[in-house]
Image (tube, rainbow, N blue to C red; front, top):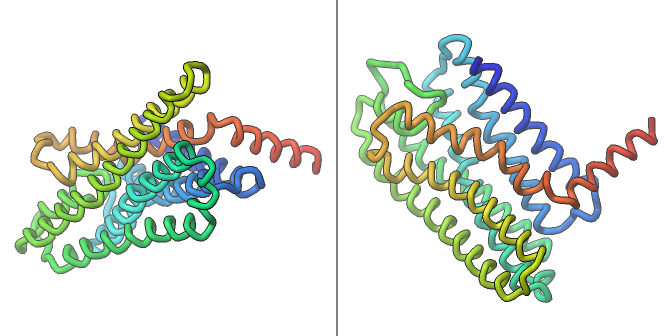
Length: 286
């Protein structure tokens, strides 16, 4: 039953994010900073979920096996992409803040080179941060019990299997987690706070309601993503149940990638129109 449920969820994540990428690439109207960042987020989440879910699906059917090197590689890929998403979500919130609060200066503030630079920094930062963590993890000795009570190779389950002292890796991970989670999340909250203040100056009506609806849905998903990561990586002692740990892990590995395409783009009229135009062109060609 779980295999079927999560297979459907995984397929919907891949399909939803692929539709966003196709819409942005194929439509000239969507060649703007906001949709450029959204397309990057969609590509990132395809890779992000694909580094975890296939192995999880295997585990539903039989006891999944993985080598130590494979486990470290999975954690490196997954962790790097998760960290990159933290930075990318902050970039997207900053982009919306500039677009709403400084509409006249926005084209100058968010030029193509600056947009590309922000995306490259987000991706590289994720791989550099988790590369350091994995380098420290690779120096540990793993012996004795070799079963991970989890659906992927996460940091704390791996540390519990280490025979050598993992304190350096744990402290480094804690410090990096505090920086990489609280700073982007603080920037997001600040950006949306400024947006709310700007929207409140607009006369009450449909546009204000739409803005508040969009901001609240964005913040709900972002808070779920950052909140679950903060609990597991900054305050892991707060979670006393292994089942609860898996639930929190599911929130940022499966749940938020399902809702992100819907909330950010697929209910957006411009994206819907781009997809309908693309479908119409394909039908006329055939």
